[in-house]
Amino acid sequence: MLHISTLRALLQVQGLTQADLARMCGISRQAVSLWFKADLEKGDGFIPIRTRSLWQLAKALNLSIDQLTKPLPLLDSDEFKKLEVSLLWDKLYPSGIAFLMALMQHQKPAMARLVQVLGLFQAAPIVGKRIWSEFDSYKRFIEPRQREAWESVWNLQKRLGLI
Image (cartoon, rainbow, N blue to C red):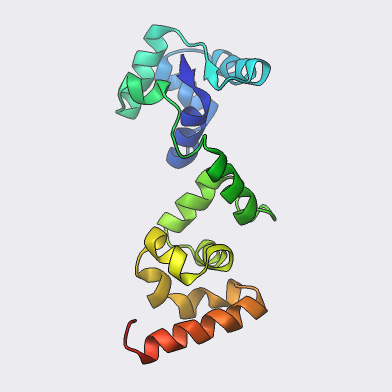
């Protein structure tokens, strides 16, 4: 059984479509569509897939079968879902995965949102030193009142030579 959240995350991260998935597995697009429908009906996160298709998919994605059949621990946690709600309340990004990808690419709106929700100090371990060094370039995306507060923290850190 293939885990749907793992599959959806892989599709998003690698920019693949259901048609791409079908080609990788050597099956029809309709068969792949049925996988996603089966998840909607059952809702347990696991979708039925033939062993041959699972093997071909794992090979095409350069992953182990074990990696495809287990849920991603972070994505299926209640904590991640709560964080997703607080970070994506306005659909700035379509999903938590898309938001994480934007952070990995150091996109300014994503960095600003992370700081706006978590603050500079909590965002730093997630993004790294760039959260401080690039503050000037993404601060315009932060809500004005919060931006003012974080600017004073950033200026203090800068004066102390910590940035």
